Length: 128
Image (tube, rainbow, N blue to C red; front, side):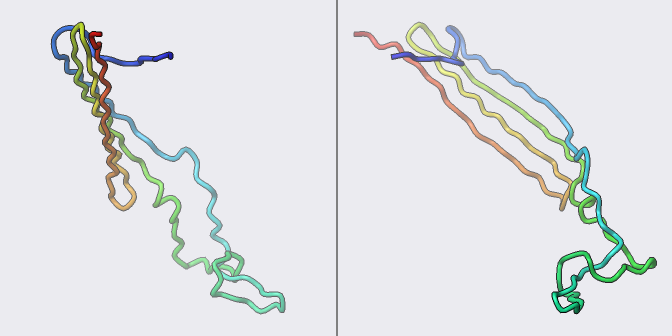
């Protein structure tokens, strides 16, 4: 049997570690928006169907309001990553418990996405 240990508590006193990071995120490139033609499509018999979601209907008048839904959806966001961990041990065993938290402040619809999880790794030497 092979056991691979990646992180473990160290011998000695209880240790608490804290790490924080702030980063930003935004879309690098957005697709071009078609703003020449309105909704609609031609059916096989040549009749214009304006109830269609296709964008090949009549030309949009120059004085009409044009909306940039793609640009309004993808906005700049800020990401906060915080990590607290507790570890400890002695000659008979050790433990390591990280508790990372990620908060992503997303601008679309003023939402905050949060992710939290924790792990516990423990090892023990048993006398035979």
